[in-house]
Amino acid sequence: MPVRNGMVRDLRMDLYEKILGLPVAYYTNERKGDLIARFSTDVQEVENSILNVIEVLVKSPLIIIGCIIFMLYVSPGLTLFVFVLILLLL
Image 1 (cartoon, one colour):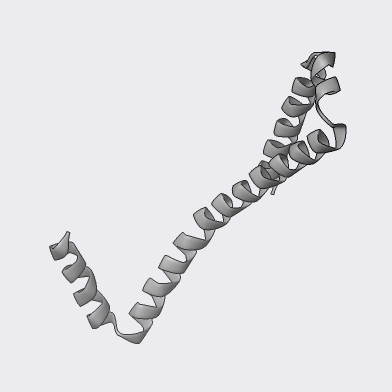
Image 2 (image 1 turned 90 degrees about the vertical axis):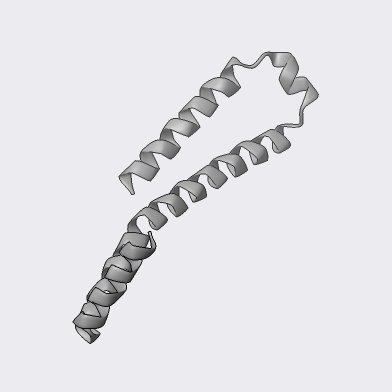
């Protein structure tokens, strides 16, 4: 979680600096509610994407390791046969 929170914080700070750096004419042409909604939605989407990537990077290897352990528990011989077969097919 610290990685995700740090990235979101940095993104929000960059966005805040960008908002402050825009000319005043930009704000007269755009509605303020639309800008705030767009900025908060974009940051939320990036945060969700970061969370999904971290989940996949952690979850997938654990599932693979768990499946291999289960296969070894059920039938070590058949597990060895499957791994040899996989090596031959590659």
